Image 1 (cartoon, one colour):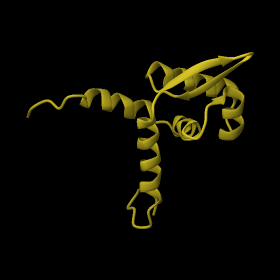
Image 2 (cartoon, rainbow, N blue to C red):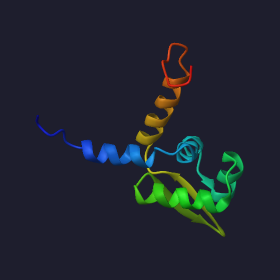
Image 3 (cartoon, one colour):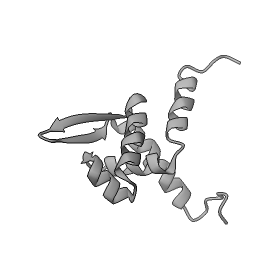
Image 4 (tube, rainbow, N blue to C red):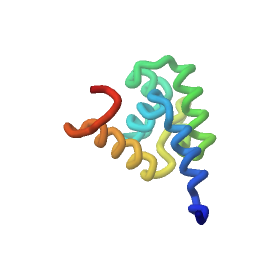
Length: 102
């Protein structure tokens, strides 16, 4: 079988997104750039845990950061990842979805 270009990078992307907490952060950031504190409040996670997940997302090139005064705002690096996450959520919410929870 011929190797499909980008398959290994796509697998790494799904590994990074394989955390419910990181999916929640990507979902939140798909709406607007947010600070660690705002992400923690909205996701119901501790600030240290959010920071750890943001570090992972940033190392994977999925999130960028920009300092605004004393705060750092995090944003998605591009909209592709938002589409992947939003499509996955929409897929499992479909009435005829045959997931593991029945």
